[in-house]
Amino acid sequence: MSIRLAALAAATLTSGLTAGLFFAYACSVMPGLAATDARTLVGTMQSINRKILNGWFLIVFLGAPALTALAVALHLGDGPVLAWSVAALVAHLVMFGVTMRVNVPLNNQLDAAGPVDRIGDLAAVRDRFEGPWVRSNLVRTVASVAAFAALVGALLAA
Image (cartoon, rainbow, N blue to C red):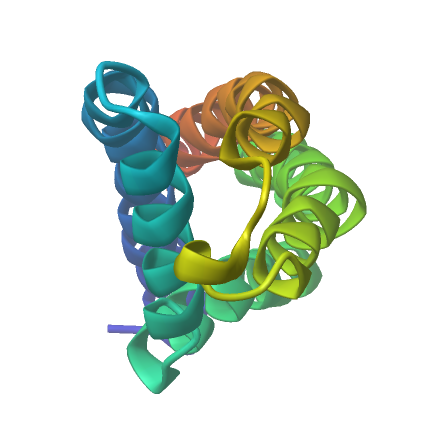
């Protein structure tokens, strides 16, 4: 297997994992937490936000756009593969930008609220977090799925 194809395959794999993670939040985690009380949602999301910052997540989350950029660089001049790869890179940049500008700051605000047992107004903390986080997660889910689909297109074109 050539380095070009390996980079494209690795970009596709990490993109699929990223899209799957955000999709799982969109269709199960957040709807499930929406059906709970404020204490459960705030405490659970605080715990998830701490635990997700691990090596496996970071390899996939940072690897997807980095490997896509590598695939773009390795396929310069390769018409259809390049076009699909550039589309995927743009989608990844949207996903990454939304994550860093919206989701991460919301996660940090949730953590700064302190331990769930010491938060005076859990409903207010939930209200500031839940709606904006769910909406921005939907955007990054669509962007991640688009990146994955574009990379599948690139693989098929290769």
